Length: 374
Image (cartoon, rainbow, N blue to C red):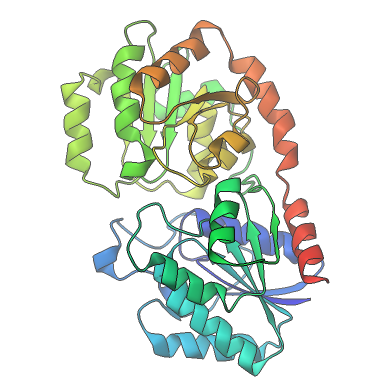
C-alpha cells in the first residue's frame, strides 16, 4: 500500500511523535509510507510547555514536511491536496483531541475527493480527559470522514461506539515504546542521577497535569515514609501550576525524599530514569490509556496504577504490578509500601517481561492490513 500519515511527528516532540516514528518503521517494511506533520501544532496561548520541538538526538527515519497549521484552514486544504498527490491507498491520522478535528476532517475530505484513498484514525482518545461542550460534535464531524478506526483500550472502544454507529474498527493494545533503547545497569543509572545505589526508588514520569494525579501521589508519599524509606523521582514538564505542587511538597515535608526534574527529557536520557527506578507509579484520576506504561514495560519495570480507563487492562494486578482505586492516597500508599515490604520487584518484573510480548508493533500492522483489506 501507499500510506500517508498525518500527525504530530519529528521534529516535534512527545509521545505521539515517538509512536509515529515506530509506526512508520514497522509499516515501511512492506509498504510505501510518508509522513506530513505540523508547522504549528498549538498556538502559544494554548501550549503550556517550554518548547514544541525535540531537542535531543533525531528520533525518526523519515523527513516529514511541516505543512499543517492547526489554526490556519488554508494549510488544511493544502495538506489534503499534497496528500492526494501521493495517490495513497490509505491516509492515517493519529487522533487524541477534538481541537484537531477541524484540521484533520478537512484534510481527510479534500484527500478523499481528489484521490481514492481510505481514511484510518488511530484513536488515543475519542473524547478528551478535560471536556468542553463542543467535543462530541467536533469528534463526530471528523469521524464521519473516516472509514476505519483503531482503538487501544476498552474505554476508548466504548467511546467510539457511543459516537459512531457500527464502525469498522479493531481493538489493538498500545504497542511497547522501543524507541528509547535498552536498559541501563541500575547502579550506573543511579550514579548518573545522583541517587543512592541502595535507595528504594519510585518513578513518576511524563507531563504533569491534574488528571495524572501527582498531587495524589505526593499525599500518599507522606504515609509511605512512615513505614519505608523511599526516594520519589518526579520527571516531567509542568502543564499545570508548578507553584501549587512545590507548595504541596514543602507542606508535606517531602523535599529531602524527592528528586524533581521539571523539564522535558530528551529521548536518549529516558532509559536512565526508568532503569534507575524500582517501580513506576501512574496515579491517574482519569485516563483512557497511558504511553508511560508502555515505556515502563520496554524497560521491564513493574507499575503501580489506579483503576481508571484502560490502565488495569495493561497493568495486571499481582502479575505485572499493583492496581488501586483512584483518588485514594491511603490505598496508593499501602500499595507502594507493600511493593517494597514484600520484595515484589523481581516477581513483577518477570511478569512484565512476559506480558509485554502481547504489545507488538507487528500485531498493530497486521491488524491495520486486515482491517483495510490489503
